[in-house]
Length: 409
Image (cartoon, rainbow, N blue to C red; front, side):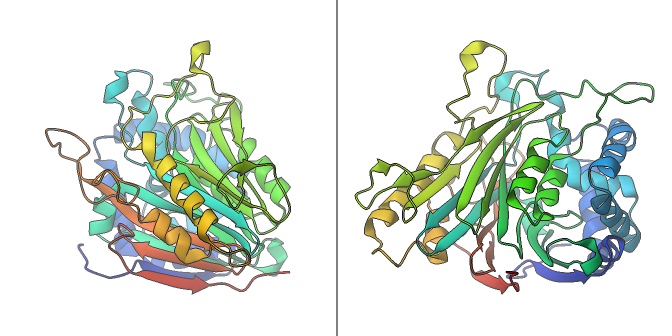
């Protein structure tokens, strides 16, 4: 199913969690089935029988306990798309499952193509958060991403609207809600990522883990920022990942998550001359992150925890975005802030192309390998004004489209 559509499909779902999932599955049935079949045979995914054991004995029971509403929505997607429940979990857990070789292979052979660049900006006009999402070009070529706009029921006592970007069949990779909370994510690899909870016989290690994508969705289902942070920090997990979160109330934080712990990165405040300064009410601040541990608390010399990202563009993408943001902070007059087009431009950086912030199709190896990778989408969420601006493909080459949701007081 190859398509030349200019934008990814936007779907709106309403009703109970199961009904929203059923609508999602029904509207995207063929695409969901195609993506599930693709991931079941992907080289980076463990054998399907092995995945089934992890999904049935660990992921499903853990999600039922951690967030029953998300499990119900996944069941709805399964029914609506006529796709086995295990395969919908596979689509949502692909990131976690690809890490099964992290402790067993040579450092320079570790593969993780889900490399992203994330950033958030706080200024006198509001808060924006966004990312470039790098992935296998298959999802771009076959139009297998979706803008999912979910309207909840009053009796659920959740934010009225959650809008997200993700692969078809997913509950979202990044997103924002109508209470002004947003989230973006990027991959991390650590030597302590593990699957030691798996056993040949049934039985749980307590608590069994969930795929990290469900922790992100739980955050977007929260009205209160502090509670959202607790759900992310407290999510039972077995792999590492970076999660950048912000709220329209002018707070932001980046969490470098590892199994059973985490590191914290707070915003860097910059004055009008581009110098780092102390936090202040009227100041401008930002966080940028790619795919390496950068928290001051991280120390590979301890020997217990060390980064297993094999290098590449992650070593400079974060700095490229930071450099451009600081340049804009210096040049933008007070009162104008750093609006969405500024963030779009920062994500359009092509220095060191093809392995740039805005990445065109390439194999990231010399001589060239088989798997083609790229920036499959770029997105900026304006948490103050309730807009999601997204493009399909590398942002320096693509057209952008804006979606607006009604914000709550």
